[in-house]
Length: 149
Picture 1 (tube, helix red, strand yellow):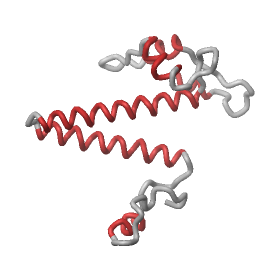
Picture 2 (tube, rainbow, N blue to C red; picture 1 turned 180 degrees about the vertical axis):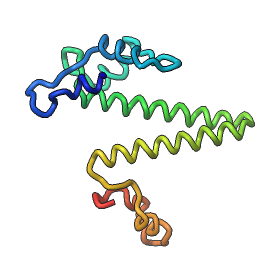
Picture 3 (spheres, one colour; picture 1 turned 90 degrees about the horizontal axis):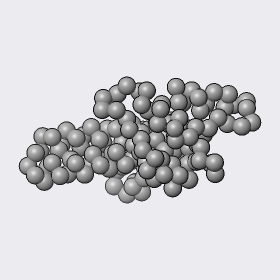
Picture 4 (cartoon, helix red, strand yellow; picture 1 turned 135 degrees about the vertical axis):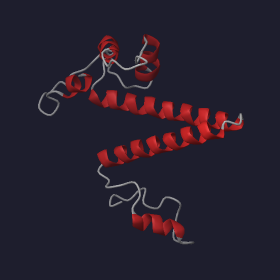
């Protein structure tokens, strides 16, 4: 419902719809997830206001909302990677490896989604993967920067 509110009429209205802290708080509360998605005013200040994702009046549009979600997911993934490393360091290899694998998969999916939204076809192709395996043919970024990949 929040995304619908933010994007409704986005292509034809001059003034984009914006949401403030209270709209976001109520929208997250209505998700009915367990545990509940809590978002405090301190979170708003740290994740929205300080990162420049909101307008001077303290509201954000769909682009600010997307940027905030990407940053939140990035921080969540970093936290999971730290938990995985801690689990392995304390001898809980099974849990650490499981957390690591699921986090890397989630990070890959978010990277792929961002690249697709930016107009790229894929993160890696078979051709770029093969180039990475051939000595002297890879600059370490094969397939990551070209629009056709």
